[in-house]
Amino acid sequence: MTKRTLMDSFSIRVAKAQKKRQSSRFLRLLGGRGLATILLGGALSIGGVTEAIDGVHFLVEKDLDGVHVLRQKGDHEKVVAKLNDGFAANSIFKLSQVLPDSLVSRERSMFDSAWMPVERTPVSAVKRDAFHEEMARINHAIRRQFFETAMPFGDLIHEKAVKYDVDPALVAAVIEQESKFREKARSQVGARGLMQLMPRTGRWMGARDLYDPEQNIDAGVKYIKYLQTRFNGNVKQTIAAYNAGEGNVKRYGGVPPFRETQTYVKKVMSNYEKRNAELKKYAGGAAADTPDGTLTLR
Image (cartoon, rainbow, N blue to C red; front, side):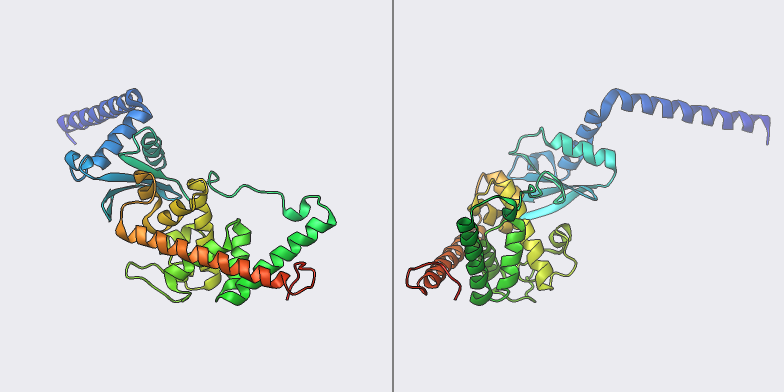
């Protein structure tokens, strides 16, 4: 190797070192928030800045794998950015929290402790007198018996509803509308099983086989519980989010103006009211079995 070649090689190494130092200095000066601004700006600019103010909304989803940025327009959505790097993903999600809701909605991982049901003291652990304990036992038994006899998979519906503190009548109403109780049902977009869950949602909720009734109902009821927590127990918004997605309900501040979703909410609410009426009638029949009208099991 000649002397000139050695000098050139040395100069290149010095230049690279200087560039690296300058880059590091720039990142330190920019800071995490500034870098996140650039990254999110790049993601949102895909499709054009003018689109961002022309009926387009962005959904920033944070899950166990990273952050996804989805561009939504009407009923259509498209993933425009996927960030799996921990720092960049967290920075993007943090920045999205200070952007206006009219432009960006946010969804956290469904395994985030922020949405998981709060641990409650079991009813059996609360000190009550014998009368109230017996009434609670009978009421629980009547409700369980109603769901076991009134519909397919009623035993699983009741079991999972109790597990996640969700009204089993609401679960039954959703299943009736989604699949008509057909465990092998599959939609054109790939939703599967009794509660018509998308594979990704099923995985988030811990289900590996969405055609297995127990896994499907467990995951679906857990998802309903998640949505109820997000919308402070509002039943119509929960149902709308189950159909159209959490981001769309937040974007419109209620049931989105989509014909499909509005029809879906009406039908599920009708099913819900029907099941509650049937349950009330069933419980009344159980009480009428004794001369004094005391609630007993038939």
